[in-house]
Image (cartoon, rainbow, N blue to C red; front, side, top):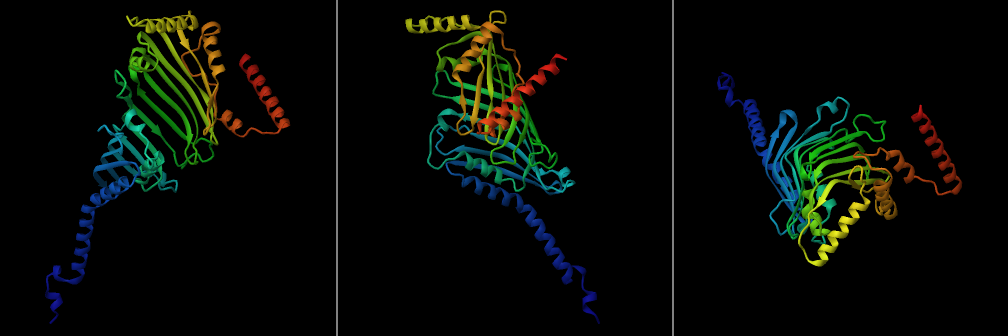
Length: 389
């Protein structure tokens, strides 16, 4: 008589082994979020000069994703309890569309992240704290190269508590998109990754950053333009009063910039504009009254009377290790806006990646330099002819 045939199926060895494996997998799946959470917290605990923690981890195996809830990072010497980095929810998943192109990469979507720079916390130097350490640690949390990145309802803030009154400048409702960061597509492009960000600035202005980047380099290449429009100048009062002793009764503040970086060489400009502004007259001491009068006179003489705009243009250029500005060119730009032709409230479309690349690889031989300058003049003449047509 065959005893094995008469035994219930659940007592048979092969079924017992199968059941054990299934139970083991279920137990591992239940423990997996805790395992990932502990590993992440271990990584955060080893960042020199900083401390951080993640509250909870959710695993979604069916879509190859995990969600980090309550991730934060702060400086070890910080006196305040305000978190430097506060990421309530971060969704990290496999970018399935890139698998069709033969690449395994990830995408990150962050909901309501906050970066709050407390001046007093961050200015304290510690021998072991390094920005590269915490950025590398956060990147290591993601086991696969990041190709797509999104931010929704983000916040950036600069706070100085020791100023009187406190300085608190914020960009809220930040929406940011960056794609093709690992160059899965458009491999023939110099700057393959489109980048776009929008938000609401201090003084209820609008901010827009647009351009292209290439992150697959030790020093990323980029070509970006920035426009901050229609911010209420009175929102700057805490800052301007603390540093230069002036307050605005009314006015609009705008800022425009173009930045190009090629092979570690930066070329660009920053163009702030102040329009329809009026200073607050206060009954201060004699020195404060003289200073406010001087500022008011300077503002009246150098602003463009037709557009009621005070503006300057600050050129920036050089190796990233030694970026320089031209004081003379900045001063000339003030005169140009006030007395020659008023600056427009827009980017000037005069900086390109090609400019930064050319200057980064500028020849040192005099003959080559002369040849290059002739070619540049030839190109500019051709462009002017096309514009006239």
